[in-house]
Length: 110
Image 1 (cartoon, rainbow, N blue to C red):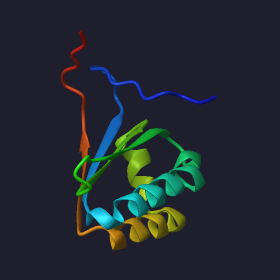
Image 2 (cartoon, helix red, strand yellow):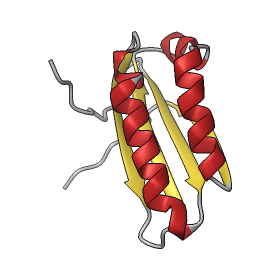
Image 3 (cartoon, one colour):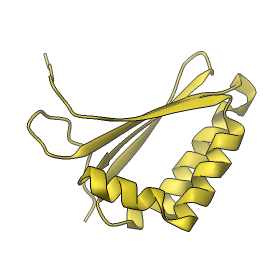
């Protein structure tokens, strides 16, 4: 069963926000690599909830917003050899990247 990304306070999940800096001519390739990694590997790892890949309008950033059931699930994925191959491929396309785990503190809607 597919689970949609749900952003709300009070959930005990780990939210990964990874901001990649990329040359504009490589942005689409990086988006494709991250999307493929999610479909081929990440979504089948224990604790994976969802991933959303965002491309900036200026072509210079790609953001991966992913949710994991816990920080432990996320850390376990980091040790998986297949996941590490995908991450290395993405890192090779980027000029830089800054992965961080977050907790949702505030949500606002109209």
